[in-house]
Image 1 (tube, rainbow, N blue to C red):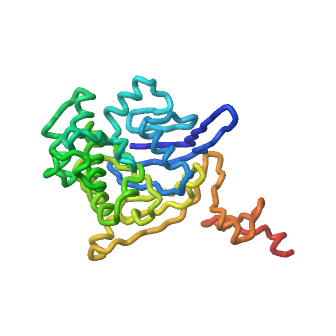
Image 2: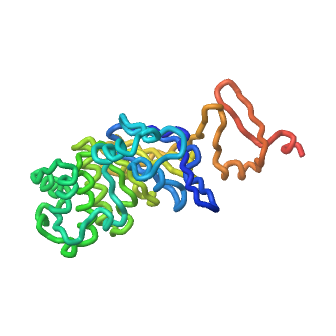
Length: 289
């Protein structure tokens, strides 16, 4: 569903140039539910904005389904946002119109796209547990209920891809669990691919896969979860953690800085191949010294 290779995003002003993404590689399978984790400034929201058609990449490859987001025209980008992608913000005010009811908020993007379907709008609100709140205005809804209305709105155009930027960042733990359960149900029943950006590692147990982004690049740390273990463990969630080294096309490795520091490696390392494994260690000359 998503394939990014060597993705670069550079923001420029008259006096400064900021590289937000510097050669990021990531792939997401159709129907997958995954989370992207990273600290503030790591580039995760920039990636989400590019995938959502809200920002243009500077270089590299980025494909979503049949769309090449590096080469689409402005008109094609409008069609992409209308037909392929749904977006949920942490600040749900960006999704919602305060003077409309919950149902009217979900109906509005349908009317703008020319695909009005009141029955589907009602069904969406029922899916997020708000079938009894159709006629309530936003000030009559709690923050968690407003966020669930925002989820319904994001699905109004029947997207193949749902992007969520810190969707649980402004709600309590109980509401956060409810929202993640809604995502999982939508993922399973509608088959929609879901990508969630968050800084909360606790979400790792609620998605298929977690990818870490650091300094605008896909990190060497990929935290994977095998959902098939849930039932075998009697409902208890097990996390499977694996470490990967990112290998680019010319054979360069990205090794975690903490690993190099722990071995005292700075600038040069010794490397051996024993027929099965590649071994990287402190240069022999330094070990002897």
